[in-house]
Image 1 (cartoon, rainbow, N blue to C red):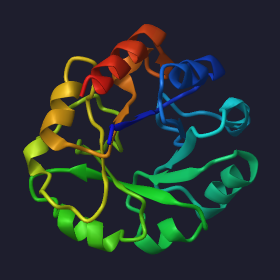
Image 2 (cartoon, one colour; image 1 turned 45 degrees about the vertical axis):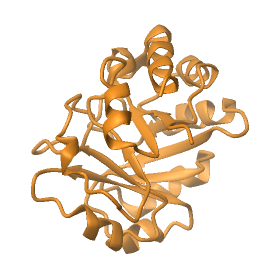
Image 3 (cartoon, rainbow, N blue to C red; image 1 turned 90 degrees about the vertical axis):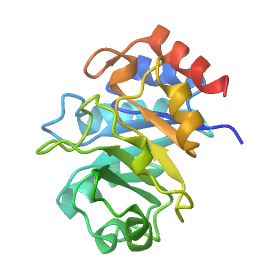
Image 4 (cartoon, rainbow, N blue to C red; image 1 turned 45 degrees about the horizontal axis):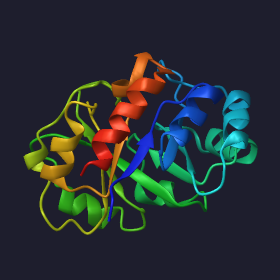
Length: 205
């Protein structure tokens, strides 16, 4: 089974369509104001409306107020929620939509317990732990920290790009990979050529 790909941090319609054209399985919309990839609700709705069938639109939240999440859901056609903060399993489950839970991995992270705690999630997205930063740092974490036989599909994130994604897939054998900064001209602005090169490296696996 081939590895799936999510292109995250989309802020423009043309970048979303480029990602789809190059073969991405999902696009990510960031609803987190401190992020340079934050997208306003109206723009997110415009992007989501342009996405064709069979491509998943993911909304990313970081410790967001429930009313804010519900407001986004009511206006943007999201297929999947991604929680990237300290949300509890109950909070993640409360919106009635499928979700994935991001875990920022460090040496003492118990991923087996995380998989049990978030048993209702569709996958665990494993990202790099950086103190005080929710994600999107562009740094790789130690993939050997991922135990074999996790009960949840693994979406590998954190510093992936065309130079290292083939190695990442070979070593980790994730269900999917998630890239943002690795296919950008600058934060929030994607590069079609970089997306194409990244996808080529995924598909050679």
